Image (tube, rainbow, N blue to C red):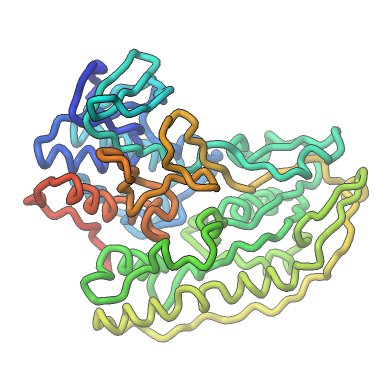
Amino acid sequence: MTVRLPRKIETVIVGAGQAGLTMSWWLQQAGREHVLIERRTMLGGGWQDRWDAFRLVSPNWTSSFPGFRYNDDDPHGFMPRDEIAARVREYASAISAPVVTGTEVSHLSVTAGGGFTLETSAGPVAARNVVVAAGSFHVPRLPPQASELPRRLVQVHSSAYRNEGSLPAGAVLVVGTGQSGVQLAEELHEAGRHVVLSVGSAGRVPRRYRGRDIFRWLAGLAVHGEEVGVTLPPREELADPKLRFAGNPHMSGHGGGHDTNLRQFAAEGMTLIGRIDGVRGEKLTISPDLPQNLAAADAFFDLRFRDLAERFIAAAGIEPPPDDRQPYDFEPPVLDEFDLAATGVNSVLWTTGFRPSWDWIDLPIFDEAGYPSQTRGVTDVPGLYFLGLLWQHNLGSATLMGVNEDAHYLARQMGLPEPTTDWKLPIPD
């Protein structure tokens, strides 16, 4: 529901992606006046920025939003880019969310008498409350080596990549092995490109564990963990705050969903190298960390999630089949130098993530990493909230399955009554 931007309103939600729309549903249930401000001219959230062949890594059933459950006939499939973007638009329509599109917020400040002033491209707005639902992926992150590489190379960040045909002929250096990097490396390899993959510290998780998609257990922990006494670890338990920005563990939703194993990639013809330490003309100096990075990726699930999944299974009284994962033993060679020209590399695909940028918020609420200081979305500034942040509360906070749990928490902090309709994510067994 497109509306005119008011000059004064109780609550402004900045951002009308999944997080902003979910917060709108909660406010609507309580009959609270609000408006969503969206910088894009078309709704659909950040999904619209993904590459052409993108698919969700979470099953379709995780796209059940409060007031808008997934009821199509492929709950265990994996939506392509345009379908999940369209679903976000349909959600906005289904709940009649009051959205102002094509409007940029350029400045947020506290007013002398309380509340906030938002300066926007459509004029100022005064609000008692502000919920910032603009995500955490704002500015592409490029390492220093990007500026040192030979000028002949075409360099593209994953945010600007669309398809294999947009890259010049020849081999492709893919840097980063989070979810996007591994899926793009596989896509390029299947298109017949020679892929050189620089392996980082991101882990991997199995597509299926004990007979269920891995999201059966992750969503169970995020949505029902408190009920059975086994929850995803909160942000405060991270060993290092920098882990908030670590690459997501990799798997794929392509081809019906499958594991993505870097050792298998190497066995099938990809060239795996460690981190890039330096650049000397056409030659890269390579860290000897490839074996450690591969071992860490292999161990990630067992170290971080297997015990949680097993405890949840036991506490919930579920009896799934045994763990039938099989190890993949292949040790690729360890290189200390790599010659780009000799290998025919003509392009570099940086899948090195993003950094947050909140320069439009004129308030002293950010830590040394530029991340908002908050407790599950609640800041020290009365009336200012965040929703959909990376690790806002736990690993699920910025995912399809986890935003609604944090929205419920914010609703309670804002004094909203409990809704009379079922708002929990339905999880198939």
